[in-house]
Image 1 (cartoon, helix red, strand yellow):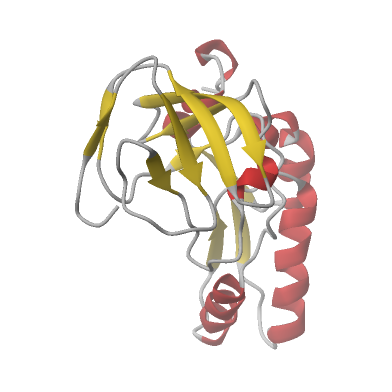
Image 2 (cartoon, one colour; image 1 turned 60 degrees about the horizontal axis):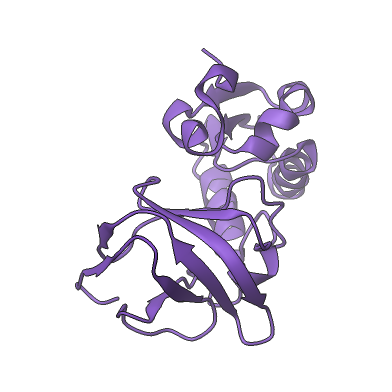
Length: 188
């Protein structure tokens, strides 16, 4: 959707287009990551939910066509959706790589600039942190920056002990985490 909004009404069925970029309309909307390589449909499962715009729009997954990159969903509540809103897939194990090429470039840049800390968003498991540590080790000739991990998904909460072991510090994104996790499971 380009600077446009569209109202999706409770009880209607729409499609999320994960490969084809198109403006939002009564048929659905596009979800394309910044690399253009990630097909979100591969991580969607029938019966799970897609939360859009900080959870203001809840969609129940009814069908997935990974080849076409389309997800058919039932709209659970009425909401006006604007452009560039974030998507959450509660309980999903994402198939996309943790670090994009742009992420790697940014980390190398931060090392060369002598940053003291690298903060990682959407860490889901210890291997995500180890991947960054390897990149730092390969590119750092002086004191290595600290690595802080942000806990903001159900998956990261399940793996919090291993994430803490591999991190120099953590941040709890309570707002993001609350979208995917019952309030009583959100650390305080």
